[in-house]
Image 1: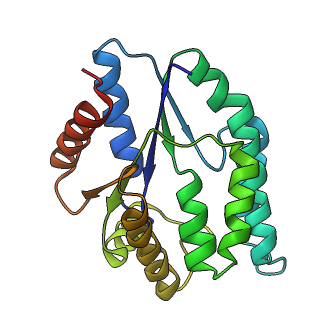
Image 2: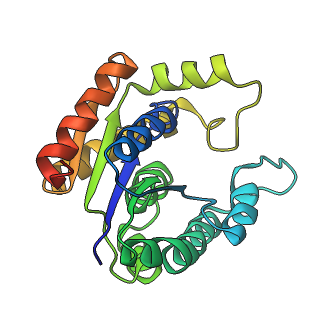
Length: 210
């Protein structure tokens, strides 16, 4: 595979969407072929799964293990339909969330068995790892305040208790310690332009995009 898989991770409201857009425009200005995608929802099937996962239905709650399996199904389809073919075609992929989200949200957040999550991630990805993961580190209170300020409705995950989101943040911090070669922390409290410059610097140094 000649392409590169660049993943953006972080808690709700950390600025992934904005930074992916900035990064895509920058890379394309360098003549690099870019694909922007996301999980869940990076395929036609994934869009249906995304709706099931994020729309809140009080009368039909999703069990934690069911949630985990739905995310795994979305990822499996995404890897086979989008990620592997486009990497083989030499594209640079900017992906909004990947395997670390499942560990942070369903592992640390929900408290599900880490070995089970590891097995499902392995099955869903068939061994495909990111070339680099950019963790946009932001206080959960700040991120959720951003979400509430820019959206009239919060999805099922965004409506979870603050303690849930704090556990997720702890998960990302632990993952960054475990995988320092792959996960790079970026201070997302800074101005969006400063964050973008950090992203550029990391990609130039780590992936030699220039």
